[in-house]
Amino acid sequence: MIPLAHQAWSLWINDGATDLVDSSLAKSCSYSEALRCIQIGLLCVQDNPDSRPLISSVLTMLENETTPVPVPIQPMYFSYRGTTQGTDENTSSSMNNMSLTTVLEGR
Image 1 (cartoon, one colour):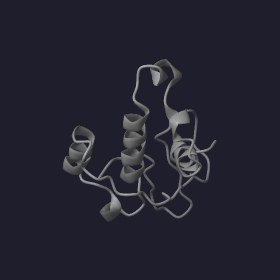
Image 2 (cartoon, rainbow, N blue to C red; image 1 turned 180 degrees about the vertical axis):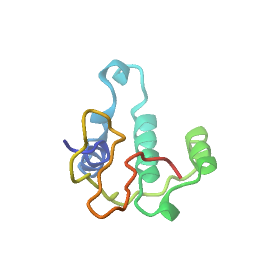
Image 3 (tube, rainbow, N blue to C red; image 1 turned 30 degrees about the vertical axis):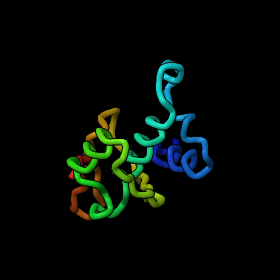
Image 4 (cartoon, helix red, strand yellow; image 1 turned 60 degrees about the vertical axis):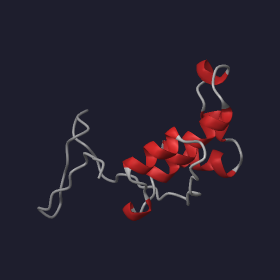
């Protein structure tokens, strides 16, 4: 399974980001607004937390079309290795008595 951020990035660099717009919205949405939102979204998933915009900056970029939006860099991707027990996504396992939490939270 390819992470959505990877798909979004691939479409972004290949000038296909408008493919991310849901078909039910495509006719009624402004593509320039959609591309701006996608660009802001890519900024929000940057690997380095210092490269991510603050929520106040995100709101300013969304509310004001004249506010410049920085160009995102390729985000890092990760995948989980190992197995989970049952179908509970919040389970974890350890081979060295260390624990790993698989619940992701924003900063």
